[in-house]
Figure 1: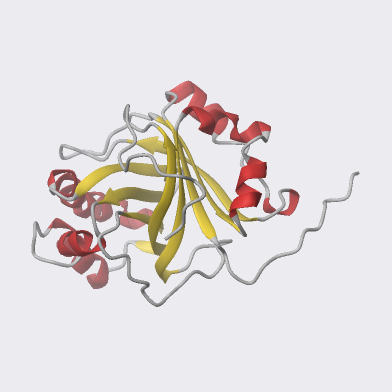
Figure 2: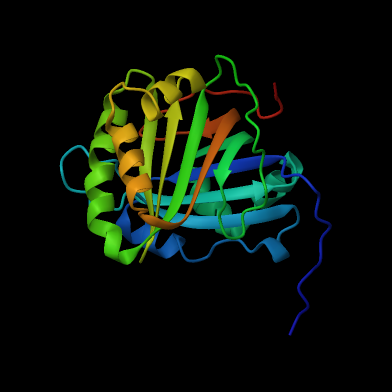
Length: 242
């Protein structure tokens, strides 16, 4: 058996990359299995694949699998550049890809390295928000009921740019959303406008829905490709970081 190569690990994760490919149900189910393995990819600290599903517009969650997503953490941009020529990255080259600076984290997630806890200001820049959770099986019903209004109201918020549900059966769920600014995103999440997300948080505090959960705020500094037929953040130079 070949030895697994050992690579140096840096103290701080420099970037989180988001890769979304709207390739339909069949290709998504095939692509979700071969996730890159950190021990075998230089500079990779974390990688997890998810099935994409639309944020709900009605009372019930969507059962439609629209694509596959990869969430990964890296030591630096060069490590990500090298990975993009790997066979497991081929499907994501057809979709939307973003390089992001982590700017705030609440909670923890298995395998995900420590990210900044103290909020780093993002000014008027757009932000991405990633939430991942493992739902308690006996709390699926209340969780789904609370998440519905929050998802519907997010889609209607004027600062909402794009979003998707992410699934890893049987019990892991996530959302990825893009917002015009962190200030406007906070208005939705903890303010009274519209109120669905705040109500969901209150219900979770009363009786927790999740075993594990993490909230990660990100500042995208480079994007390429298309999501929903466009780049919701506009194209930027991959070499540029604020």
